[in-house]
Image (tube, rainbow, N blue to C red; front, side, top):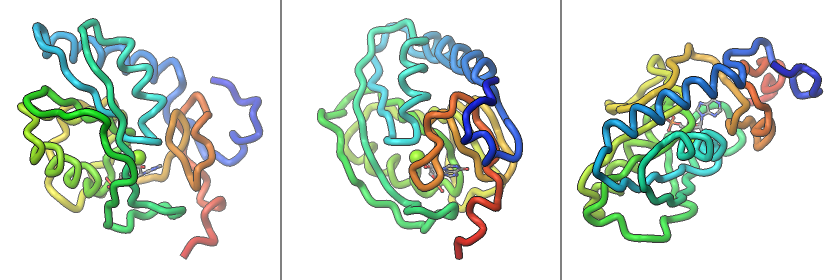
Length: 187
Ligand code: IMP
Ligand code: MG
């Protein structure tokens, strides 16, 4: 763990260090490699939060695969989901008949992924699984099956390793709990 950067002063605690993250991502890559033997899945990165996790994960998967990117937005600058999901950037290629793995940073209410699952299955993907780095099951508002998850976390707002608050902290190599004083003025 690196604590030299000023951004670490905004954290209450470190939840996962970069080494713990790397070990979990490696294990997930091995699991996906096993589960998709003989297949060529399309991995979809949900921008921007999943970007750091995604580039690490695909390099731990020992299979031919394709990647694509999608951006959705539901949060704005807040720490609470608005419940509304809007597609900001669509995929470049068709996923008709493909085995799709949607890669997300965190499942919170589940609204984002249930919207994405409906949308992508509607386009004729032959299978669809969800891989998330973090899962906050206590906050789920819709029923959703999460196929792969590295860590289940308590109900706290976390940043780092791609996850942001108001677009900041994505470049922290560890994941930490953001101090509530940082977002105390939010209504
Ligand atoms: P959901 O639609 O409520 O499941 O929200 C998922 C999205 O909310 C994630 O992709 C994140 O962008 C964001 N999010 C949820 N919880 C956190 C958090 O603790 N830190 C940073 N972003 C979060
Ligand atoms: Mg996200």
